[in-house]
Length: 83
Image 1 (cartoon, rainbow, N blue to C red):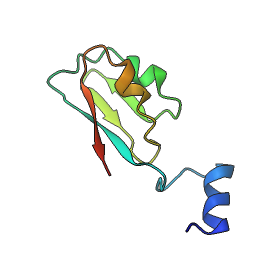
Image 2: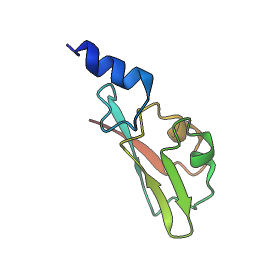
Image 3: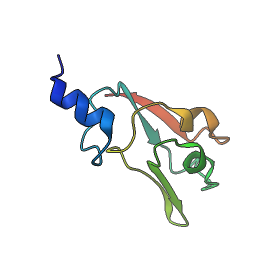
Image 4: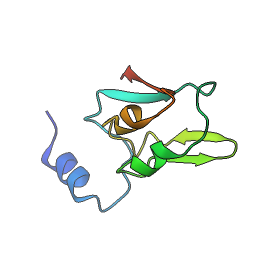
């Protein structure tokens, strides 16, 4: 069970999240399929995805596992892995 302090820290969002204790699945990128279109970074509500010419990077400290990126990727380059 989570302590009140852990829950308060996560809900207030006063500091960057160091770990996400509620995430069940995390996104994983297949770099061969990714065409760096940037849609995943645009739809991510937590700003956890950055896309550049060199590729896509997911900041798992900011990712809560909502997998919106997975559903919106037109190339199917993102898959889910159980934590």
